[in-house]
Amino acid sequence: AAAMAGEALSRVPDVQIDGDGVFKYVLVRVRGAGAPAKDVVRGHGWAEYHADLFERTAEELARHGLSCECLGGGRVSHRPEERKIHVYGYSVGFGRADHAVTTEKLKAEYPDYEITWADEGY
Image (cartoon, rainbow, N blue to C red; front, top):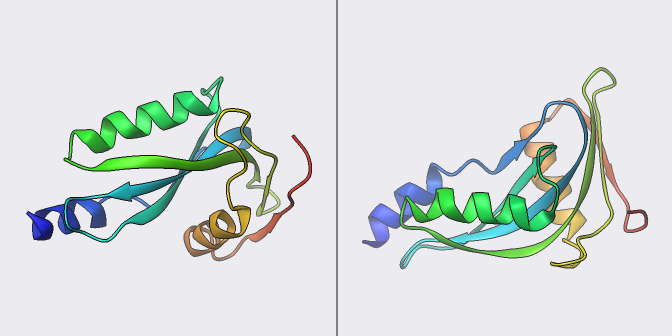
């Protein structure tokens, strides 16, 4: 079971965010049975609330036998024409995500971008 959970976990993308705009994001810790946890970033403009993002993510992961918890949220400003991403703000329901962790995940996904973060702002 642990090997299968590890395989399912490895297939979960570290980052899924919209390609443009300003939108909410959540930092989610994903777990498989007996497998190490991993943190993933999800951010989309369709989400009115951070909980919308988390619930959709939890449903998708549950189908693969994975569980998750929300570590917090914030906002992402993604400007592809400038190759810039800025992470900031917080989630009223989940609290502020560790933007430094989010930024590292984004840097791995967008290596040619300038990626910054700040704790202030909403």
